[in-house]
Structures are given as C-alpha cells and as structure tokens.
Length: 188
Image (cartoon, rainbow, N blue to C red; front, side, top):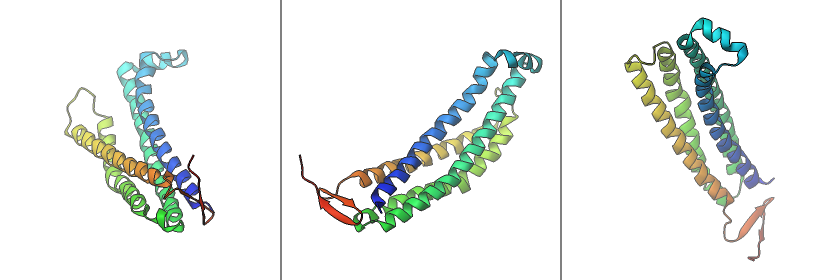
C-alpha cells in the first residue's frame, strides 16, 4: 500500500474541506444581507410582510443555525479523517512516522474546537441571535472572543497541516517510497 500517498490524500482532503467550510459559512451569513437587500420576486412579498429588519433577523438566525450544524458535523468528520491519517502515518516507514506528532497536534486542535469552543460559540450564538444588532451585549462580546479563539486554533491546526503536507511531499535523500520499497531517483 502507498501509505505516503494515502496520507497526502487524506491531509489534502482535510485541509481543502477546512477552507471550504469557512467559505460556506461566510457565504451563508452574507446571503441574508443580499436576500433582504434584493429579494427574488418569489420572496419579495414575504420580506415586505415581515419587514426588512425581521426578515433579516430570521434569515441570519437560519444561516447561523446552518453554520453551527456544518461546523459541528465537520469537526466530527475531521476527527475521523485525523484518525485515518494517524493510522496511515504510523503504518508508513520510519521517516514518515516522524510526522505523527504534527497529526496528533492537529487532532488535539479539533478536540479543543469541538469539545471546548464550539459548545460556547453555539450557546452564545443562540443568545445573541435574538438581540438586535444595534443593541450592546456582553454575550456578543464573549461570542466574538470565542469566535476569535476558534479562528486562531483553526489557523494553528491548518499551519500544522501545511507543515505535515510539506513533510509528506518532501523527498528524503532523493528517494521516493513505493509499496514499502525505496527506489533511487536520478536528478535531472
């Protein structure tokens, strides 16, 4: 089995999907603004009946709930991907096993996000969702602090992932591993 290739594939999927989930979350929240500002013909009467403020609040709450579900589900998937990646790294040769600590650090970051930060972001987010945007709120400030902490941990996890990817893609001593055997590659 090509454990290096499998590990690189799993890590690439992990990092790519992490970026995708952030883009989806940003898009969801801005969609509420766009829909209220220029509602499609089929929704214009509903926005008019509700009023722009109520329609905007309703759409933001919906987008926030979707984002909460996406992030929580993605965190569970990351734990699975991380476990598979860890197994692939451990099953690889000794040169690749040196990358195991980076994978463990990535998994620990996801554990911190899922079990510490996300529950607080969810709880505070639901409290803040019903507070008008122009009204000051200590809960909103705490939510922003948790969101910032989440973003920092996500960035650190991704940095470890890029370091791990670099390690997987680097050739050790001009050699390439293939099904447990090493072949020498001529430099061009």
